[in-house]
Image 1 (cartoon, helix red, strand yellow):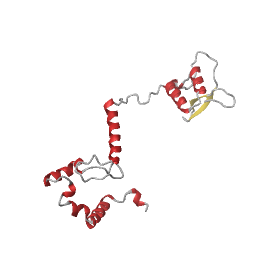
Image 2 (cartoon, rainbow, N blue to C red):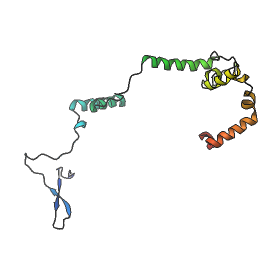
Image 3 (cartoon, rainbow, N blue to C red):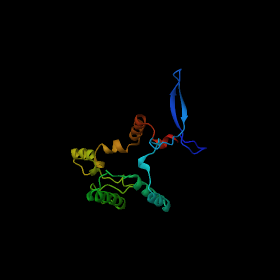
Length: 179
């Protein structure tokens, strides 16, 4: 313990009394050079003079973080694998495809698709495997030509029942709960 008023270190030692109660009592620091000093320190957080100068010279936060990380031995993303060239090119191609879907309907293979407001909505029935399975059974070029499409997907009353069933099963969407 450090005595703030006098600036000296005071160590506490527990003494056993006759009634077996323990009470800390201060021990004055000795002048013996043979006894080791009982200071607590963290060896990994010590800075050299050069490191301290580097910290004070850099005023930019990013630069300071880099200096501190270098001094502390921190290597972020040290064990993360690097992205391969094919992965980065696939991501770029995917972004380009999304942009292309919003420009025209060249992505449509059934001939009945229209460009929608978002790339997620711009999808052809030939791109969904479950729809392809149904289409192939009926030997049609687009799901809208299926005999069950109009009564199931376009009838207002059927859509209302499906909506309430969905709402009962999954509840309100978070943005609707506040309305």
